Length: 386
Ligand SMILES: *Cc1c(COP(=O)(O)O)cnc(C)c1O
Image 1 (cartoon, rainbow, N blue to C red):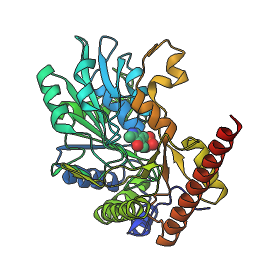
Image 2: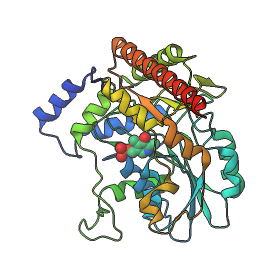
Image 3: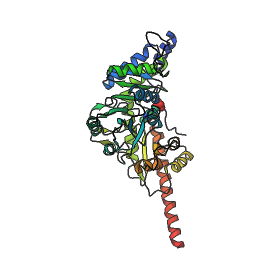
Image 4: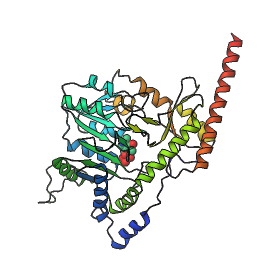
């Protein structure tokens, strides 16, 4: 079976982990945490970086650090991971959803302004699949209405928008180092920002809101969302390979794109836009309406042939957990609905070999060709019957 993601750990991970083990510094108090934080802050050009347990934790901390609450509304894309929504919902703030752009698969920024109300406090920009959100118009809107920008750059580590790094745009920006991101710590995340007070709050929230003066007396509830020195050791080794990882992902993505270009029935994201080159967090495809099955059926067919694929996200306005709370009643976002049913991604890990990629492409071509001829036969026989 070709796995959907296999990470690449070919830097100094072992060396740095050995340092942790030999020195006994394995908790969050070890020196690698700060080294990794400084490396990431420098890379994206921010004053502060706060390492946390995972990317979802980063979003949780960001929402509370910004003091979002029940009087606020936050605009987010409907087509994203649940972590973006849950971080906001847990503060009591209300979600306002925006549909996707069929061309970039990111939030359609032309639809943001109509979602703004007198209660809107923030816009969350989530860069997905490898292309950044069109940030210039989004930032213009944020400035015009005085809104805070939360940036989720989990899938865009190393990506740029008009030459500026993803992760440099938000009042507060978040990363994930899950095993399928451009650099990984197994589980891990980071918050970056420039504002000193926001950074202090985020550090405190990450660490149970212990107080420096009286450690076990708390003014506010936080979490233990600390990153361990072991994770940060892997993170620093991965960070040293970030440029190589981004180059490798681009190479894999472009290779898929050229091998699959012209295959009938599939839509692919652009290799480049005026403001960015795709860094292919994963290689996604959206099936044409002409295909007689949806992405999940194609996923099972590929699995039978030994290829693991994954469907796209399921939109927030169709999540049972939110519908049960009476949220998003009667709301429709047709592009996101289509992407969630017709979209899937192919094996895209950094350790993917060209042979695995060639095999995957053959399986996709054959499966689609068979499906097309089957549906052609079916439509002929049904027309013969009537
Ligand atoms: C992976 C991811 C997250 C969550 O990160 P975890 O480390 O898995 O909690 C958040 N947002 C986006 C866009 C992601 O891709």
